[in-house]
Length: 253
Image 1: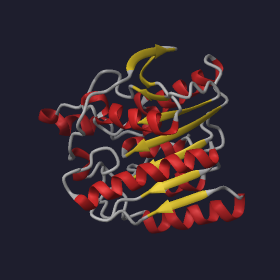
Image 2: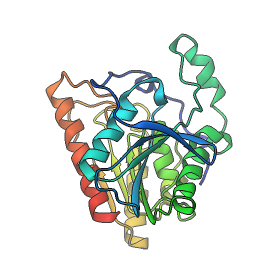
Image 3: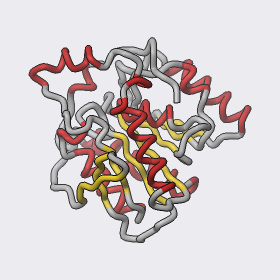
Image 4: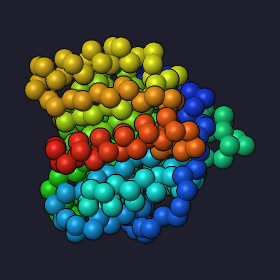
């Protein structure tokens, strides 16, 4: 994994969004010191599973757990959501001081990529899973890029509207990779052209399956996990993207 040194700060849309309706159906558990939410897949598949890397809000909103429940129900695979923030969820009243605290490179922040990687490794070594897919949102989207590198326990990766990345992070991708973009994204639009060029080179030079979806009408950064479901265009983009992610895992995982 590489650090996201030199990347942009979280944009305003990182701190906005909407609650999804409903209550989580899964349970909390722990593996090798990492606390996680488990949405058990009805197929009972013990060889394949999905890891979900959350946005900045972590378990402070129910959305991450509800999205995990959807993927478990619709793919049939169990979905593991590591508590990246180790119970310390964002407090909007002191949000700037918390953002300042994570300005150092992400590689040094154990509650981001390193926790996701640790849980993924343990799922293979301790629980016997042979293949793992990862879907990440916003900050978790950056993790999805980092863990698409060759030295990762992740086999297939999906990234929604990432933040805090460098061009080198995209150039290091060596696993099947899908990128889901928002129509407007203050956090990613600036580097998107160069990132897409890098992904095209990865696809052609290393014969890596790469898919980019950039047709999500009405959306801004965060729509993949905090969509405004009252807007028909956003709802359609959210549901379409979930279906595409499901299909990507079915094809490559």
